[in-house]
Length: 118
Image (tube, rainbow, N blue to C red):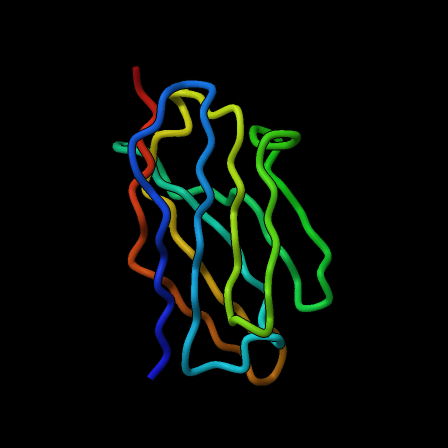
């Protein structure tokens, strides 16, 4: 059974930092592209950052220079370091694992709440 479990969310002051983690089980983690998405109340889910199986990264413009995605294949975990947080970063953050090609697979975690507020 495949599971993606996010952790690290919480309440933080504007300008503060959080590190989200997503640990996968039931998959060959190193083969998957891992992506963080977020969804704010009343808005569509949007891509935040992606890291491919070979370590290439891509970021949404609204987080460039503030967020960093990384992965530790030995721990089956992907991280999202979030710095200089803004109130507009408030959302539920979701972890996604995707295997492309003929063996396509796509999995989601349940999300972790991030609230940026004074």
